[in-house]
Structures are given as C-alpha cells and as structure tokens.
Length: 310
Image (cartoon, helix red, strand yellow):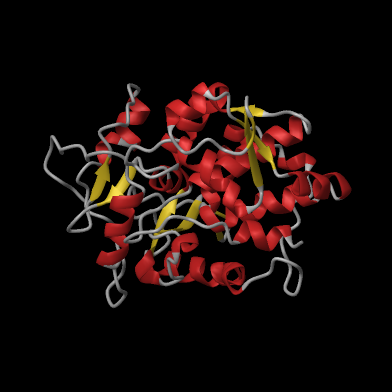
C-alpha cells in the first residue's frame, strides 16, 4: 500500500474554494502522538480542546469543530475510531463522541508500516505540510502538534519516488517565483519597505503566495508579494491581509501592547502596498479575495490616521 499517495489524496470537503485543513491537522496531531507513544490512543474528550485550538490557529477563520475530522478521517483508511461499546465511530456529533468514550489512533496497517519503516513518519508529515500549508508555518505547526521532524527522516520526495505527483512537482518552480516577485517589488517588503542586504544578497525578504499553492495558487507575480520574514509570517497566519485598493489590513483579533507591535504591525493599518513597479501586474483580485476569505482572521481594524505609503 502506498501510504504517501494515500495521505496526499486525503478527501477534503470543498466548496467555492473554502479551505478545509481539518483532516490534515488531525493526522499531523496523530503522527506527533505516535512519535511520542506508538501504542497510545487519543480520547476525543481529552484532546478536543487542543484540536479546537489547532483549527482556530491554522484553519479557516469561520468557526469549526474537531468532531468532523475525528469521525470522517476513518473513510481515508489512515485512522480508526473505537468507543466503549467496540470498534467504529459513533458519528460526527460532539456530544456522542464525548459520551461514547470515543478514542482514535492511526489505522492498524499504517502503524505496522511505521514500525517496519520509521522514516515513513517524516515523509508523511512532509506531504501533509507541503500539500496543505505554506512553508512559513511548517516549523510552528510541528511544534503545535508535538511533532519532532529532527527525529524523523524528512528527505523530500524525489521525482519517480512513491508519492511523487505533478502537484508536488510544482514546488520546483519556487526559486524562479521568488526571483520574479522580489524583482517586481524592487527588493523591498511591500508592507513596511524593509530592504536589508548582506553583501550583495538580500536577507530577510521572501516571496509570499497570496493564494497558497497548496490550494491551487499559481506561481505567478500576480499571486505574490515581496514581504519581510515577519510580515510574511503574519500574512500567512491571517494577522495581516490585503484589502481593496491594495491597502494593508490588520486583524482586530491581533493584540500587541509594546511599541514594537504598534510600530511594526498596528501602524500598517490602511497603508498602501509598496509596488509592484510599473509594467508589472499587481496582486489579482481573485487571489486577494481568497486570502481575505480563507486566511485573514476576523474583521480588519479601522485606520485612526490618514493612510500612507511609508
């Protein structure tokens, strides 16, 4: 059985480009748990709070429940659920999962495969991360689910290896995407203007996908922004967004009391994006709207001062 391919093809609920990373998040959590205790079970009532926090931080901005993936991941053949009455999930309702003593863990066949080939754990985790989340979130997400990739074989998939797919191959174009985007924005952060160099090389500047490539975002300049490392992370976490007229959005849910928070985040509210240079397409409206609906958290703050570009 090709576990890499099976994990790469997790069935996800999709509608109007809505982001639904519920199953990948649960499976990453389960892999982290397996790494710590290969024989342990995950009781729904005990992990519900942690799963809910994961969905709030790394899932879509609208309210959701961890009961959905806990029940439905079974259909993908990588997860099993038991209750106090025996094998099988009691359903996707929160109350019945709690009251029935529902517990879940990786499917028996997958646990056998992981015991025979421990390096498989790292490769499965890499597939889940690459297919469902932007690179800027990978380290934080592994820490959140308790997954130590330093202990796993995290060598990337190579062309022709099991689990290779055309979709995964798209990551080969990232280097050119970075060059095109940074050039378009004249090697400065589109939000704050940072343009640091170390010798002849840029440092701390990255090409951010507005619509994540894991959700069919193209590797084109009109789907990219040149951002500093800080603002790239905040953009991918939904703290920052891109509004109409290409002005910076700052989420009302963000709280920062220090002068650094005010200067580097809150002061961006309503600021006009810097770039791209003349003759280069700005971020396409369809990608901007996708990020606003699927990544940005809550409502944007209102600017208390006249919008500026610097």
